[in-house]
Length: 454
Ligand code: FAD
Image 1: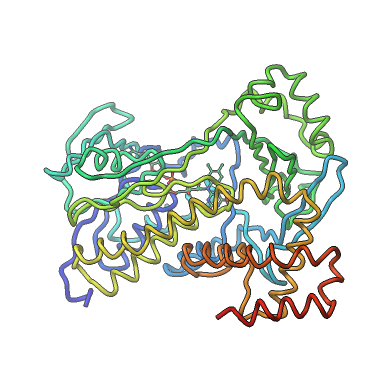
Image 2 (image 1 turned 90 degrees about the horizontal axis):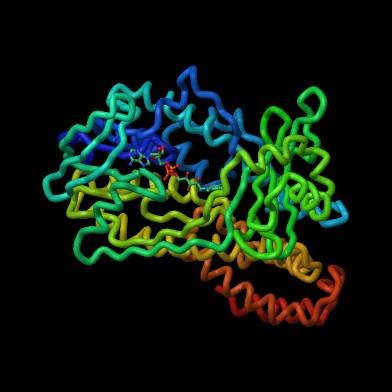
């Protein structure tokens, strides 16, 4: 068992969301952990947060947080979002619940969550976090790190026993693996970038839009979304082509930005007094999918989180998937103890198909969110799916729910979702209104389809 094995000193590169959670899990399994983080301590009094960036936390993430007993603390500062609130060009609203009554995804502040996790990490006697330590190079054969102290600018070489790369989409640990034999790697950028903007709080910190929803302004080739903050404001993200008629390239002046928003996001514009300033002050950031394999080197290096599987943000699953990596790893630590060889092999082979499936789902949802959610036929299809799911709960869970409100492996969710989509394609030609679902001939078609499902 794990308890009878000698503890090791493990090194975690990156004190971000996944790195912190991983450190907690490793420490709870009896190991000493050292964490190196490039940035200064987020909790430092000098840190001024220019922007509040929010993430949607869902069931997989919650389970991983529960595993180290920190879910309750996070829930106190999380805002439930029970569905999508679509804003059409005329400012008309349509609400589409994400799941059953009581189900929600949760808006949490990225920095707030990271700070909270750093506090917890620091309370672990076996974990030591060192900030301002940038990993510049990893020598996987000698098991050495080259770290640069960002304050003194000095570089030092540090040995490691076992190294966990949780250093994000542009991982330095992964860069070292890329130079090893038979390492597969790909990265793919969307032609879209994103920009963070703000919807101001209303009077007395009230919310100017429905608080318990994720707001979407779907516009076909682009979209804006907004997630609620605790202070009454919303963090907006504009997903927009880099080039073309409606694009970042086309909006060069404050007047152009205002005119564009007045035309396409008219109901949001009055709530965004800092729009032009933010638009030109905030960066335009790119959207990348990274795939690689193996995720290990020998039995002493492992990549987790965005370092092994960076995905585009449209399913709200990047962090959740990284947190789920920790859940999976913890189960393997229970089972394999210090048999790292077996543990690492099983981790990467079992988890890789799920990471790939999630990457595909994330790109798929981009098309759904920016385009299909504005289509009445698509909304009708979703409503019919909801009815099928209510009538046949053991045979049908909507894809979104499988990804967001279940712990089914992502690859299974994707396969189920594709099979269900084919059924919908066969049923929808017989349906023109929600009420049609009750028609005997439609009920017969649905029953016949369900009879064939396991
Ligand atoms: P990171 O959060 O990137 O953390 C990596 C850490 O390593 C950082 O602290 C960094 O400073 C440090 N580091 C990097 N390089 C080095 C180095 N060389 N040396 C030392 N330290 C280093 N996910 C969701 O689940 N829900 C969402 O709603 C969601 N929305 C998103 C919206 C946007 C616009 C984007 C871009 C992403 C979104 N994601 C979302 C994805 C989520 O942000 C990532 O999946 C998650 O942050 C990954 O965590 P990580 O710890 O693996 O990497």
